[in-house]
Length: 279
Image (cartoon, rainbow, N blue to C red; front, side, top):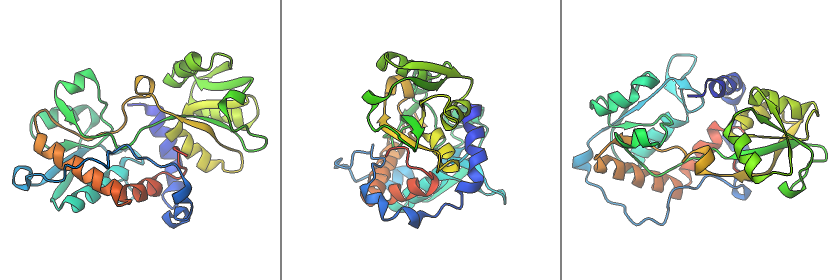
């Protein structure tokens, strides 16, 4: 797991936890919002007797997805998503925290039924797990200064900051060859370079940048995009279950679809992410 990502989000968390959901209510209708779940899927029945309670496993070190708050309670986007999902399908659920490196073995050893902790869909995990539908992806975004910003990527010229060795840097080099790429050690430095006009734009992970933008609202904003690529930026967030546990996976997929249909998923997204990185 990316330690820098955790640090950036954790530093921003103090100010973002107080962010009020109702401030987004009017604007939300005009925004581009996460909608990766197939709301047209007709499957809406699962055998509750085969599922019973769902024992979710997560970690405590990845705010705002899953972490312990000041009073020690497990909370975050993933915790509330699991609670909403279980309420929607009328299934009892529990949430346990495990060290990241033990999640896969805990699931394999039946210590839990589902992992909701940004477990990557990869060849090594696919041998042991099955995955739900994707519910959230992390696109790459251009970030530029508010004053005189450009609105179309084909107008972006001159210097663009990226994190050295990142997937965003690779994507930029392949698809925007006319741009002059300036590499930085981390995304914070790349974004600060935009803030102080050392470069014209930064091309970075949208979720990470959203927390930085929340701290710098008068400086900068997202420009163009979002850019999605499973090859470069991953398949997105899913819930993992033990391989062959189709009953639980089906129930989770049905719950995710219902939450999307009713707008509850959007409410959770806007609550936990201070700046919409899809819009």
